[in-house]
Length: 113
Length: 112
Image 1: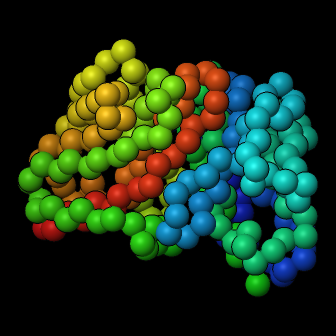
Image 2: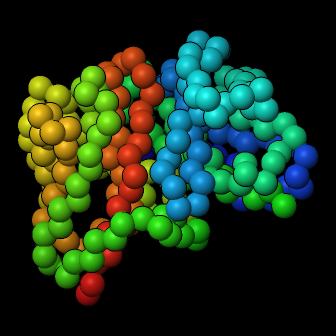
């Protein structure tokens, strides 16, 4: 069964550093998403991406965040100047159709110290 | 793996019993609803979905009920097994228009 692959599974970074979280969506999917989940809380939408541009973003997704599809397979989330409160699980998802049939990756646990 | 949802409501059921997990959704304009299962250290895994033109849908051992009048969604799991232990989230969207919005999860613990 096709999977969404995320790397690394766990990243520890110092406050103020930049991190890049990587995702390989399912190959025939056209819509890509990033969500995050702070420990003990619900899964929160960050951004959706289609046709090489952001289609929607939440208020969490401020100038500190950016997304990119640098090649035909990878989808990345960059967090500049990380803060302690950025510590969370970050999930990538992809879908063939907008709004339907999301497949989530296993997540990257980001710990900012 | 990481323990997700330390402060979530918990439902404890005996193995073999039926489980009912409830969700109150927020947007009356939502017309597509999904239940996800999340095991420790993993991403959300699709269980079952339902569109707003239906009030019930059945899968293998699972049933989703939708009550649009009171904006309530429930997931019924028949003959609950230890492998069903996880956190369960409902999610909603306005079909095709908006990203999925997740509700608060419920931790299901199955007692063998």
